[in-house]
Image (tube, rainbow, N blue to C red; front, side):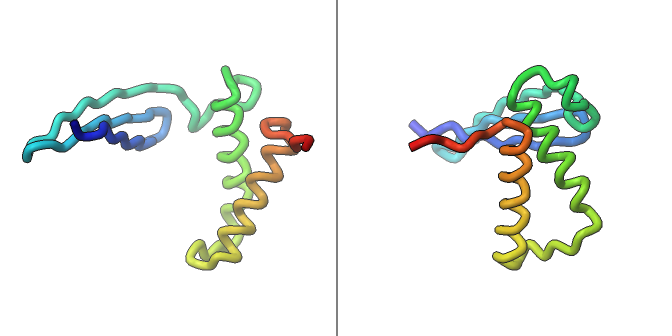
Length: 99
């Protein structure tokens, strides 16, 4: 049995999920469309932590749009990742774990 693969594509307020598997030269495919308005929803409108995280990262990246981020550079990727992790901690979506 071939494993089921998934692919998610966001276009504006819609998330399309494609589930598919390839076996014996044929493809089985299912598509699901979800309208969640995460392109415009505010943090106060978020219904769960997933939406809060999506909106927080979306807003952070919006603030970074005028910065020159060459994502081919590891330093730029790490810097952007650090900024995302920091904003998630500042908003309480992740917290420092005690050991």
